[in-house]
Length: 507
Image 1 (tube, rainbow, N blue to C red):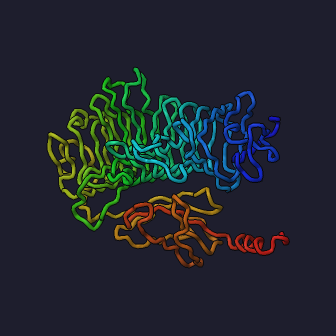
Image 2 (cartoon, rainbow, N blue to C red):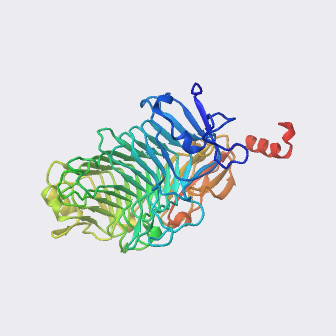
Image 3 (cartoon, rainbow, N blue to C red):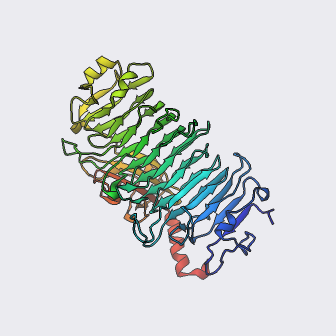
């Protein structure tokens, strides 16, 4: 039975090939999803693939698959480019649409969501907090090219016993609910007790009801550190809190451990975009819209945390550095009312463990640096008093300039496609040279909503023309910022597909 290396799963209610617990994983007798996720370690070999065939899988599921090692992982993936949706809006007491308890597994190319109507306000009849994915245990897992959206809880929680995990190329959006006091449910909640690095890269995390990325613990962990060893790289994180009516942190790295043991440590934040809706024609930039916060409790300051080459955009308090013992902050672009520091930083800011350099600050106040219960500083005063940021510069808000293409990465849902984040502070279209994204040989394209996949614009071009990406307010963004998928169309395959529909007997 287990000599084969590929196994097949169909929805239990599939009209032609229903999956069942009595199947053997073959195409002729496929499994249902929960049966596939119940594999025992003794039955597995490295490199096995579980194919999820197109359809809606209703229910909430627990994966106990255990891969053998990090080199030969078990893969659970949508088959080809078929659309696979795991729908958690189904009667169950489980607190996640997919709960993962297993090591060395790759989950890729499918959706985790709630379909249809469901209560999203605490206290309503039938309301229940349900996360998209709860990664409870198991090291060396990978979550790749997943859409995790519209769940009445957090998008994904990857907890302290899941070291070495990678979360890559995912879209995590519109997760959460209304609690009795505020929006709740974050896009991504990260912990790590392992010495193995956790990698979070090339994701879009947006419009969740509470924070975007939360690297956090509210407890001591009984003497165990589990907010450490995380790399965030090339993510686009924006407008978190917006569905609940209040923009909150796109990223927070902090601890509320009053014993001071469980401190955020060895966390790298490189080349990310953190954005909140902002009117770049306004000179005030007033109001609350924190984009990045570092530290929460003075007894558990961040240590050995670095931010390099990030774009941080928000309002008055876009960047808050509250409690930091050692911090590297270099080559970042900040657009804010001012940069806010808690007075606790005065005990550390002059030490060699604080490294600030090469930053560009755009603020509404020329006294751009505010230390609570101390003073506000111009950049000259800041550099002179603390001896940092010597290679950095300050400008007025109106002088902000960014490259029009902030992010570009291959999309894996379509044969030839790229995910992009674009910027134009006046809201004009952004031009993209198709040759720079390896689109030579293609003559037409679709521009899709990055979340829903809906086609927003279709067009064609020749070798001398650029693609114009129109700005708008899709996904709740201001007109100066947009996230899209550009799909290039193979004309030969499109004609073949058209002919196949008209003359199926020819193929």
